[in-house]
Amino acid sequence: MKMKEVLERTGLTDRAVRLYIANELVNPECPRGYTGRNNFEFSEGDIQVLQKIALLRKADFSIEQIKSLQTGGTEARKALSEYLEEKREEYRRDGLIL
Image (cartoon, rainbow, N blue to C red):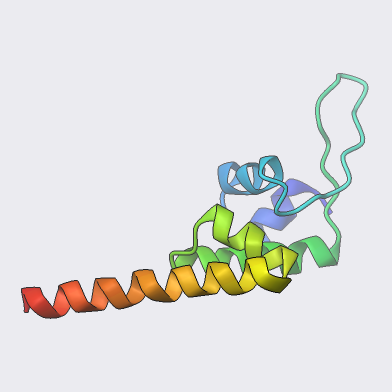
């Protein structure tokens, strides 16, 4: 499916999707058109990945943390630990303010 449909289905912006492609979080097929432009072709799997990325970004995960989560194993555990520690610190700091 084309970029326009991806944007409608995921609620993401063109800029965000291109950022995730550039950071290799999602890898749609990219046949070059006769004009030399990239014509991304997204699969249903790509849509699911983008929806997960959008959810993680809303939860304040960084792009690097999402990359680590995608690789799995110890990198994923480390990314989750860092995220949880960041959130604990935020809650502690917010509690002090209140």
